[in-house]
Length: 568
Image (cartoon, rainbow, N blue to C red):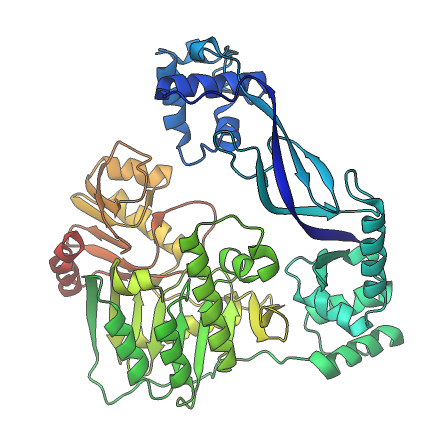
């Protein structure tokens, strides 16, 4: 057992050496020399550690290296580094007006604690000027009933009370907490204002066996020990939740003429999705990497009451969203007011959907698709205010044709075979919990030649570029090609457009920046076009996403004709 506690008190900064009277203007060169001086004296002598320890992680590493060189009037690498392969800074001395470098000690003091902090503790707030004391919250993890700097009686009390609370918890409640955890080795319970972490290894063998059985969603309990079977049956009688499966047959509206249309535009995307949602009569399938627009979420909830085959949602609650929705964690995350507002919208929208009894599954979904029996959209637009009202997005809509049916089939595959967790309403503070899903090993993925996953898109692009001659146009929020793709692109007339907020890592390409660009389009002359939700970033891991590939001359001409709207 270990406890995560939160203390309210004051951070103190104490001057050890130097002077607090530095208030003069300082040049960038002098500042960089001072940073290097402090870094070398404190054995933080690589660019990586410079970025981590001095709040410089917003500066790309190569830019930081160049700043260090310029600050010291250095041209060649070997003059700056002792071992070039390790990029190790040479020791240098402080040069700023011959003044000593300020070094400090830090403390956190509350009624329960007097803690000595190290200078690299990430919880220490920023001290400016002569400020030496600031109120704040300090989070501490205790792994035994004593801790240096904490009041002994306080530690003994919270440790014993938390242990007693845990030990008196009914077994099925312990099982419930273990099954809620995304980590199979640890889980936590909340006791008053304390987070009590429990290792699976601390549980009895019977409890561990019951948890393993329930994790695997097994049905046959005949081979279990009687004591384990009773635990499983007791838990299932109170908490069993049957996974919700999509209907096997979702029919298109056969009365509509088969057609498709492109949606490449700057802003003004909201009306498209309002139309898709409002016009649904039988079902609505939604996959959005992020859902934070309250207006459309409310419309989805209202529509769910009218559709006989329901609304079904795929999204990504693995890291970014879930960690910030968790109120116990969110207080520990330092973030701007803008992100806090966005996170509150995510939390609100998720609760709205769950209250409407809409089935939701979570996983590595970057896919943006919105499907009913009337329409099927695939593209780059999330259900966020940025995507709906400001961004330059691109997508394609299919009506009553083979592509429409293919997208329905693919959504069903993602739901059944690729989702990691089912999102379940719960009475806890967050209003939900995640139940892990276990898929059968024999589940096979059916391929559709016009709809490519991330890995298929990369392989297909390499194959096409290998023999292509002509102009290539790439629209993407960011641009990180694999080495092989980059080599092919350098041999061609390649024009790349990325979002203006993105840094340009590779200068050997003709890269132009467009404000609010979120569209994902790749065009090879008038021969092949790809449009969908996958950025031109190719690494070792992939999210679940799709690109529509077309060799239809008419569709390619339509895409090319609408590209100017992304530049306006």
